[in-house]
Image 1 (spheres, rainbow, N blue to C red):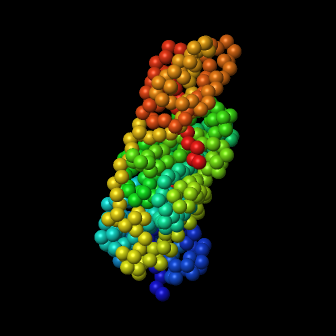
Image 2: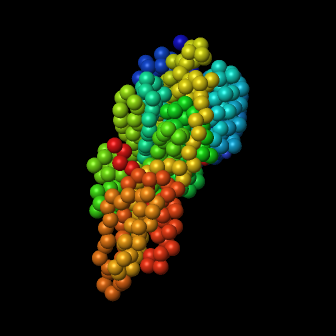
Image 3: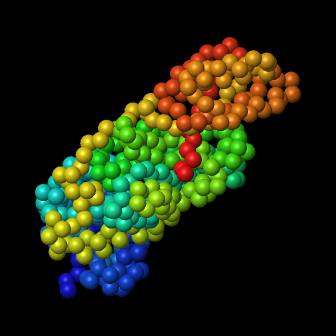
Length: 436
Ligand code: NDP
Ligand code: HSE
């Protein structure tokens, strides 16, 4: 059978890894796909740059539009990243009737509704396994493996760079900026690393997961995002002492009033498997009504692991190219006319438990004031620890763990606590989940 001609846009970390895996495993891949998959053309900005892959046998160009407009190319693999150029290229490829594979979560989270509508109109596939959690086949698991379930919630460590930074800071006492630079050199970070650090990249991925889990439109603008840059060593240590780890989690939960979509640092019990996912590794916990909790683990970034997901999509595309488009797995797991716009809750209506750390004067009545405020806002305390004052200090750190409450109540309680004359500075607040 005639080989499938692939055009790869972008020969960086993921593009280079994809070429390497396709070459290294060509025989196994052809046995699975039923045809040879050949990278006929590829593009990059600077053709003089040294690459992690061998580009022999490919026609190279600096103009990716040449490739998406080439009638001899069957499948486009978009690995440039960003939204503007990538969207133009993907829509042009679709208009030209080509199949598309991408690792671009920003593109899917922000423009996926439009891209998939165009793809369905033209009867082509746009696959994006590599866009979430690197090498973990989480899209396939959710879209196909769990298709019999009503998904209740999912929670994941879905940014490798952020998890790498938190792990290195905790285990080796390393500096935030120093570890971030290393993650960039290893090819883990986004072109704009603030996306990794501020929870934006995880927000893109959560948008995609939630859409596939609940059959809702992609809506990144409704995701609450908070990064890891405010986490202090003190909180990491107190959390450990209390039996918790701090992980940056993306959480999507279906409740009776709507869907929670949030990315933020979270205290989770140390005994949970997911609390022990370190470095660039990712993990996603998915709870379905029939299956119960399931956990998916693997490398969340890097050349070969991400290429593993890109190539799996290529194999799927090749297998399904000749299928009737109506009989293919829908892009977002649910049939396009069955996607429902369930409301996404604003962050002040989410419900979770909290870790609070405040600095208070070490004198009688102060803790009573704090607990009275919490009670007035219907917040129950799970644990309260007052640390010893440092020598000569009259102020002490106080750590509180609360039971689940509405974020709105917690915001009001924190404002009242900060207004106490005996409490100085801001109250540090980290949300807490048991993931039971
Ligand atoms: P890189 O920066 O390593 O590679 C980007 C490639 O695109 C480079 O080859 C670059 O050319 C080319 N390129 C960039 N801008 C342009 C442009 N304006 N015109 C033409 N070509 C351009 O990125 P990654 O490989 O890390 O990421 C690619 C995609 O994969 C992104 O969407 C990213 O979010 C996603 N992703 C990345 C993962 C990772 O571990 N790195 C994991 C999962 C997804 P040149 O090399 O000449 O500069
Ligand atoms: N920058 C991303 C991360 C790449 O660190 O997780 C994988 O999507």
